[in-house]
Length: 383
Image (tube, rainbow, N blue to C red):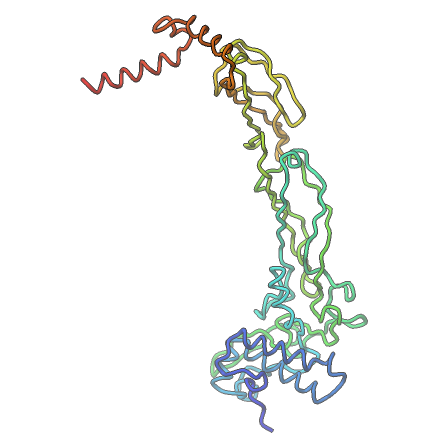
């Protein structure tokens, strides 16, 4: 009896792309899977045909051979690929769900590339923190959507009381040999997908995948001193691997929000400290904020805007070497505003008392130096 055309079995055109073939397989496999057909032998046979057609058409090399030679390409007696599948028990039903898991979680199935059960995908969690939290460290609860190990089958993918069996098609090698004339090429076994084992009685909870969609909560200790760009690796907390393979890792990416007062550069903190006109001229003490509370900062007389003051040990303790940085304060002299007429007259009197020209230069050395520089510039232009 002639075998049915693979394209007709899946109901796709001969020029169908990979996406169309996957969609058709997903639809047909859901319809004819043994879990749904309740022992109907005819429908089980249809499921075998669907699986066989999919395994050929989804593989570019097999599809090219089929388009050129038809079913003869897989007739071992003629030196072809070797069979194109066989047995509902060998069906990897998780193909139906792989694309969905991949879209949501960034991992999913690794495809039929001849690999063994794949390690779980690594995950990344972006954690935003305040500067105070980053400096002191904290415990955080992270809710991670992931693919977790199926508890019903302990991640094996096989129903309780059963286990994966050695593939009788490739005898556990995961590869088969395709012959074309004098040439022999190794190909991924179409029955076990390169794993060397098949699950004949898949777990109903995870459909043989060994993992299920789940949101897990992790309590993570963020060490003191972290900064934007730091990454914390939590080994084995990524996606569960396929059918018992090792889990991936979780990477917590730290981002520290901008602070209203402090700027951070490594272990040092920077801030601007407003200084009153009189404090700047006469000297005095001002209160300066630190992460541990306010401290007194002594301001020398004749302080100018831009002068830096270093408070040692008031910065951030490095998460790498344990050294604590400094707090560096930049003085910003404030010009008085909203003055009364009496106050304006006092300032005018002060200005007059300083005199003009050379007499005033000793009180305002930068001003005199600036205008001397301007005069020299224009004198040079006229030479």
